[in-house]
Image (tube, rainbow, N blue to C red):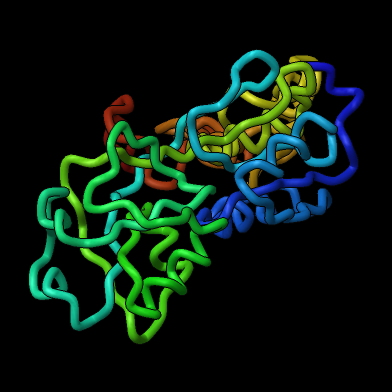
Length: 272
């Protein structure tokens, strides 16, 4: 971590389907003086932005080329099938890949899922993008399997989606150039990992000298009711206003009536 090369602002890229708003809100709360710019990017474009230094970090879908990029897996998405609302699978909550054997399953070129064998029947051509595939589904030409976030992103009133079990799943990760792990990148890593603002990781804590100075200042501050920095003590039992109990304030041997437990006085003499 170099620290000195941290940019005055933070540029964050993200692929379709990822919603970074929660982490951006926390960023603004913790670092209000550092602007954060969001950069939407396609799955292929985001790696070009990261390697060229045009963004500081980005939300990508795994796998990631680990040779020059660092990545932290964040969460795994459910795989769903997007179908017309009158499709037979819309009547159930979830299906298996075998339930699509009779359907044409579209396979977009930007597919976020890593298939060994796509279920259903293949289409004659592969759509260029997931958005194009969803349009074809709306036109009645097949169905498409996508991460749930993409089904929500491309939602249409005439389409719905259902969970598909036993299929590949998309994993979302935070990635950044390994040789540009700046203080701001560390700050954002802490946010997505749920670290508190007082976590010992990320930015270095305040120097020990500053912390000691702060403690000393707190100790020297008099509390309410203190005089000269010291607490006022309650008078000890048997003392009043700093004078010894039992002494006559005028200098006599005792208080009026005499102290209890003192010497007995003799009987008064009679005259004549």
